[in-house]
Image (cartoon, rainbow, N blue to C red; front, side, top):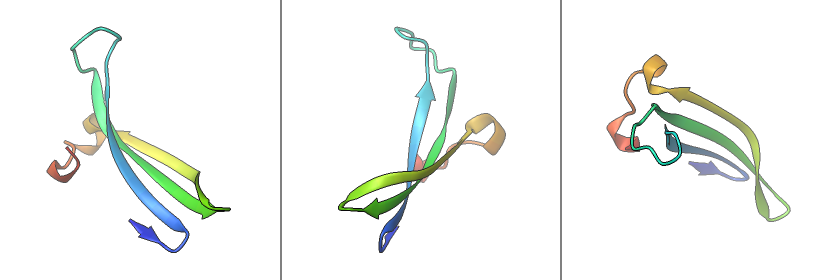
Length: 61
């Protein structure tokens, strides 16, 4: 979602050990962005894992 020079971006993630197919955790990252001098800068990042927040919504899978 973008408005003027600010934006909100969600992304999902999975945690695994290198070379393993076992998923150790999943969650959503939330990035707050600010456009300045023609590029986007990260102003803040927060995240939460499925275990504490419930399952990842279908819209983000």
